[in-house]
Figure (cartoon, rainbow, N blue to C red):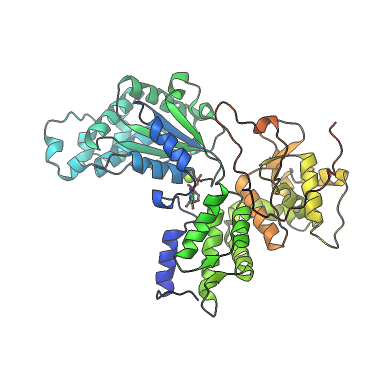
Length: 458
Ligand SMILES: Nc1ncnc2c1ncn2[C@@H]1O[C@H](COP(=O)(O)OP(=O)(O)O)[C@@H](O)[C@H]1O
Ligand SMILES: [Mg+2]
């Protein structure tokens, strides 16, 4: 029970406004740990003709950051325009969508009078008078030049400073369609058309998405999103719990932060399950205990999307426990990409928490790891993106987060390397690339450092 006068329905609704595992954050008020990124975006947009590209892994918080930042950048006379891409999106479908949303959101359209008062609107007038639909608008946009014209009209009717979010741009499969946006951005700049674009996508670099058009690339501020820092992770949980008069001790919030692997969706999910556990408790709860926490982890595992967890289930299904132990070990690091030697050391660490189980030697271990790369194991482990010999990674980072929850449910404490040796690839590069947050000082992780167990470097 919780100290609240709400009924179950009221509680569920209230909670959903605080934690949202499956929906991007809309309001800056709930966006945690992204102050640096917001300020970078804010500053970048002083330059006319600048656009924003937010990229990073699935679930890291791209849509949330774009939504919150777009709402801030959009002038107060309207709401920003939001287009979600899908596999069959095209350049024209996106532009037509933007055009029709601009009309719908337009204040002058709502008061109709000004729209008829001599504005030159080649494309949008018919849309406004509802003579044509989005599909028709789509058909009359033939060239990038036409799209530029549509956006000029958008700038006229929509607001003082229109902002457009093109979310999940990477889902647009056709490379040529995507490349047209690069032309568009260039022409918007040349013609001084005042529309700001935010693109989000899962891609290592912007030119992979836009095709290399150097002058367009220069007009983007690119923001690579990293895992949420530790404070932000536990803030999500602590704040939501506090709304219902519940406190959470340091050790438990550190576990939530660690298990979530820096993926805000998991923090939301665990917090949501935790709150329901407290709701169901027979007496009034004002402090989270380990039993609540463990229950919440179990519930969270159950409700992770089947699609997402399939490769894990496939890999551990009907095989020896060796496979799962190796998967846990592979998730035991702050870094997504691991070198085999470090991974084997994590494996030793996992196995010491498995009384009665015998650890494999290095050769058996690498053989098992290699099997995890095959189809029959859902290709859950892949070669590192960094092309370094002997380095591996989880195919999908959110899957790695799932593995961490599974380990937690079996009472295997994964934390990650606190003092991972500095690798060349971990050095911040010119792009300001950094490799995520470190475990804060003073956090007791229970990690026992071990001597290196793997073979020496070849
Ligand atoms: N900075 C943040 N603070 C709190 N919650 C966040 C933050 N960023 C994302 N979330 C939450 O994490 C989940 C995934 O975020 P989302 O923006 O949809 O990720 P992406 O677009 O990268 O897949 C959402 O449930 C969202 O509510
Ligand atoms: Mg998204």
